[in-house]
Image (cartoon, rainbow, N blue to C red; front, side, top):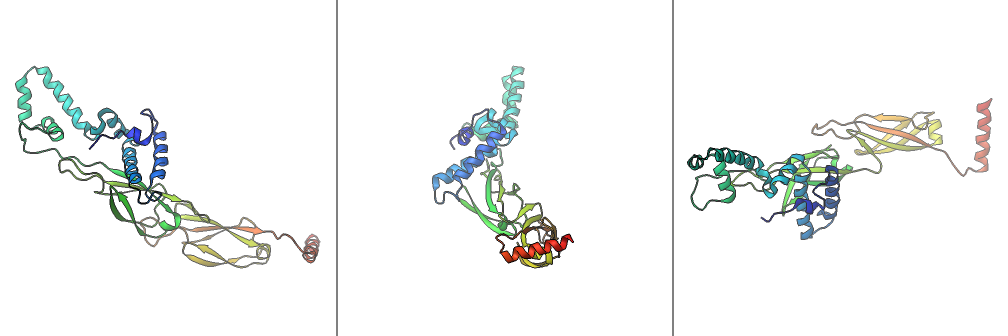
Length: 299
């Protein structure tokens, strides 16, 4: 596989800060996302490279290894161990000691044979390494994560169908084991990490498991009381208005909020704030009645 310069993929400088890398990733991920570029193979390939680059450069420890060892960054520990031992045996001045060390099947010899191959002899076994982890973003709206459902994402040309539990939060990341890069030397596959980006709802604001919304009532219901119908994510409900309800009054509907993540049957609460609508464009008769009413209240 040809070496990919992750810095060029994300279009950032090698001295880029963590925040700059994150910003670049989000910008490019939106630009090349499969949902934005359906049936575009070039965009799909670019999207995969962007995710792979972010997986490495977005992690401080992985980035440090990548800067030091390039495409072999995942084997940094083996390189460092091998270099330390090579230095040690170089100091002995004994070529025989080095050869014996190799014949004993120690990690140093096996590691380089597994990585670069050895046509002169067969060591009998090869090192196994876990494949690279992949990461991607999945964009959903608030209504979609109110119920448990199945979604499909495309990774390296393969469609992966998985279940999203109700109540998942914005920015939350889940792991799907075994759907990352192929392992080396027969090692296990890496994992796939999916981060959820959940869009705001026009009528409801979410705060963890609670929902907040507003309901407009006219002046007459605010003064005299009555009944209104309000929407929830679980259908519409009727709500009684107490006579003399003030503008900004808040009521709570217990259990009508958002589902609790991985806790089936448990929900947060829905908080409704009343906004009293003052009538406009009053007729002469209405003005007369309001004037008379104001006089009664003043007496």
